[in-house]
Image (cartoon, rainbow, N blue to C red):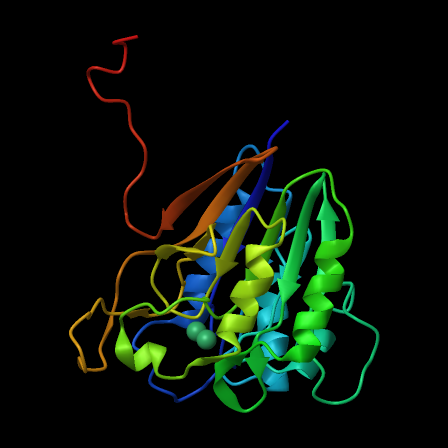
Length: 272
Ligand SMILES: [Fe+2]
Ligand SMILES: [Fe+2]
């Protein structure tokens, strides 16, 4: 039986009553996506949440995030984004198999096996900074995680994509240790890399592995590939990804929500 996994990303949930200008209603849009995930049939086995789940990582925002996600009745697998805090995520998701409490600053990476699918959550964040890091500690951790043999597919989730996207103002925050990361992936049994952070869907290949950025429910980054192009955002359609994992066959779908559209049968539906 295929395993279905949803990927929710960059919800940027805010506290009630915020006066921050967000250009869209982050909380309402996250709630719409959550409701749609709950209506998926067949149902998804888990929801992978690829970071920036809150806007600023405050306690009030994590309380609101818990409220927004509460309708989900499947495991939520969260990874930190640069807008999250590690302490906030631990508090918001107390049942998640986080690493044992470590020294302040240690990365919040984990491994979960779900219906034969191994999912690795790699914390690429640098507290207080927007960019990514893959340092020797994380290299050792990832090599150890991947050294454990696993008969089924392995998905690697990380907030920051391990490739240059061409949207320069977003790329500018950087990925320290990218070559170190790619060297691990080149030798590792990883079937798909799933990311967030970029606020628009993208795909690439890194060290022979397909790497994809999910779709955000908050405002999107505008597609601007000109060198030194302007910082621009856009209210593109929102939604989430669904990955259908059937052994090593992994297909990524996109579910748009809040479009005002619904499926219907065309006149030629009986052509088969
Ligand atoms: Fe984000
Ligand atoms: Fe981010």
